[in-house]
Image (tube, rainbow over all chains, first blue to last red; front, side, top):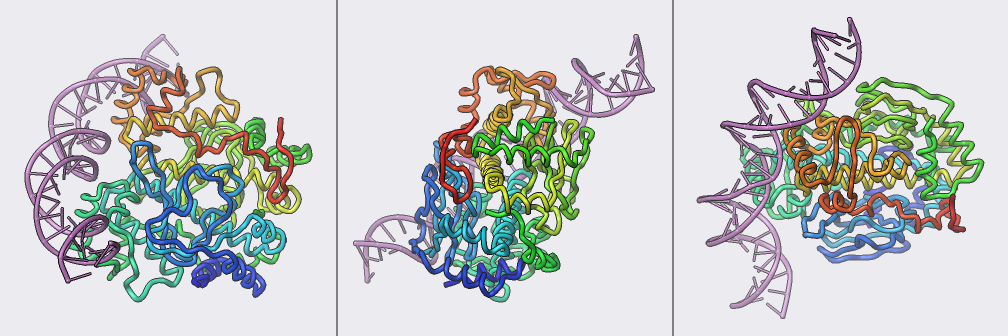
Length: 255
Length: 255
DNA sequence: TGTGCAATGTAACATACGTTATTGAAAACG
DNA sequence: CGTTTTCAATAACGTATGTTACATTGCACA
């Protein structure tokens, strides 16, 4: 399936060899599972067994308090890897659930060990993925702590937009957008009502067109400035790719 | 200096060999730098060169918006490692500044390459550190998105308390606490005034004693329940220690 | 041993956002 | 193909937290 999104994304950063492609391809086709929308893939408290690669569909990571308050802490889009090396932890501290129908490939510990030993470029690529995810999480901290409701939502939409584009999943100025206002509320720490108000405001200013399950962004720059969005934290920089060199040395720390 | 805190922390999780100790010891003494309080170690936009190991003192990671709004996104305590492998990124997406006087050891890319090739247990230990830091960042997202002011501050104090204790830096029920109310405000996304109000409230309920630069926690359980604190995300579990090295299943035990 | 500046403490007032409730329009479903 | 459920929209009202302002304490350093 859409292993393409993963490869496309990783190759933004590190050039992968034909052998690397074969390895990734095998990883992505060996143990595939399918899930319905709005279903849990992994639950807090479970022992993490595999790492999950999202082949298609959207999912999220969330945490919940005893009294039911719930926070979405990240979104997974096609091509995303859930948590490289989680299996070294004893138990999950959060849950992962699907938004749409989702296909995932399970990557075993053995896969990672083998990759670590034999495919340094993939290791580097996975480290990049890990570091970017950490940066995204920091940016969410920033959003929740400092940005207003309008800025938060604009910022989140920009982030999703750029990530989808990197994965090759935007068409012109629009994209699939399966999140409900409730999802946005749980992700931004706002109430559903206020998310609604804020979306109206974004619409009124012509920053977004959001109807059904489709989002259009007529002018990304304007949306970015509404969200005080600085894309540096996504580390998408093509120029940075003198890091091809990275792969040729006996490479960066392993997994 | 207090390389002890790092080793103590890592050995909670992975047993390190005598050789591993030597390696870490060398890393921690070769290139040491000292900084005054309230000074930047690294600035957003710079090219990351080394990884930093905090030998002594407190520091924080923060991000800033153009208009000056500022968010502390994490704290570094003695024994913490800043960002394993950051040097694969082209530029920093945040800054790191000191709170107290700080000593750090700079760990080079070459160090990581060598460790990756020859010291799998250290690699595992560093992965653990990386995964725990990611979990902490998620928990902050949760706090900022869902917890009330009182819960947020109580939660943060519990986290710092447990991390200090793991590093061997608590004395009985009290510890050094160099954060100002302004720091707490920037970390919790609250105003200084409201942090002050909230600290008064925590004091009034006997949950904390905070005076000068010393914090006492007379009853950790009560503070934890005020903050809806569940320590699972810190992954301090000793039982999980049947992990010696990635891929190498073997004995439990440890010092 | 003052003197100055940063940190803490309080009060009065302002507001962005939450809560509850109701309605209509889409989807999902049997 | 009607029925049920979910999702979106909007309004009225409530509150946790922000803002501004100023007084007090503590501590670095001359």
